[in-house]
Image (tube, rainbow, N blue to C red; front, side):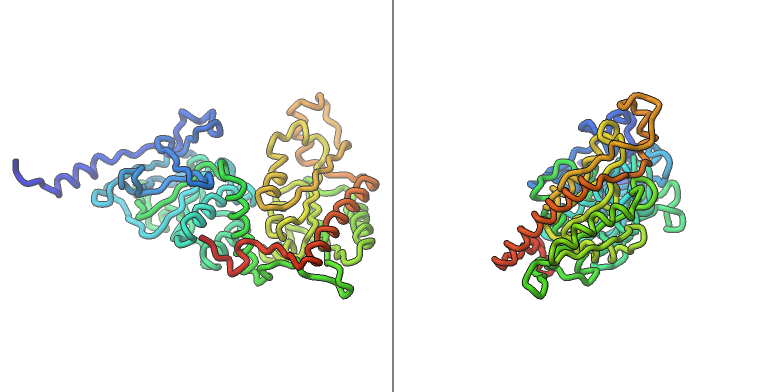
Length: 420
């Protein structure tokens, strides 16, 4: 047997690389039923905290690296992936060094909740690896379609979390970045997630939100330990009550009346400080600072409530809905109950307006949701007053006990946001 022609072997391996569509249409009707149409031929790894991810190269990939081809932002079936040995990359391949995050999102990256839910597994994976590895770049996909940006809020949070404010490099695969339609990018090291926060344990989620809170506060020059120990001149705990308002859909019909109700109840409690803020008027750091001084968050259902995890742990959230959502909006209406649990906050329940624009169909007809979706929220003075009194008393008692015991529950990451 003669000597092996290594160049010939490499050429054969290079020519044998098979690109498969990122979007596998076999699963197009069931993307959330245990399958994903994104890189469907690959299985996930599950770590001890329930994070689902893929790592390339790894034993699961038999030492092969991940390669991506295509930049279509309308049909993910025209974007492709393949596995290749580093010594035999496909033709026209650019080898990109460093760690690459590849994100699949069933929703989008513009809504801050949807975008955050796709980013959280990467943060959790980062913690599980001792926070030693930060991404050199991110590649974003939505249903296999290339996306080129996150919301400003999410971009800033990820820059604060991974780079201490260093710019987040979102790989675009555009001609201006050196990639054409037939170009291939192969990654020295890549982590892929496809299931958002799905499967993560509550403890792991709390750990992840602790790190996000700490990193955001440090980035925005807010006290890492929050304000658990803040007291009045008389030694009573300070209670921050914030109304975090929206404009347009799901805003209050009569803001002035609602503000008056909660402000009145706050004035009855010594140490209560009342604030009204509009999420649309605030920068990322301004939102972090508002939440850091808030013990009771009062807000309509909407993405702005995602900011709740910037509050001190054990803080309270009061949520409001327009007419019709309970029957027709699906499980997504409970997302802020979930994030409250995942970030160790206390969701104090929701008020659902029984009144609103009429629908010409039966109440449980899904066609009504198009009417209710953009509805505004009324108010019930008696209910709101009683609700505020109860929550204020709960928070006052808890903070008084903490103050008397000098037991201020700083987060696990308060000492410089360390982890690992």
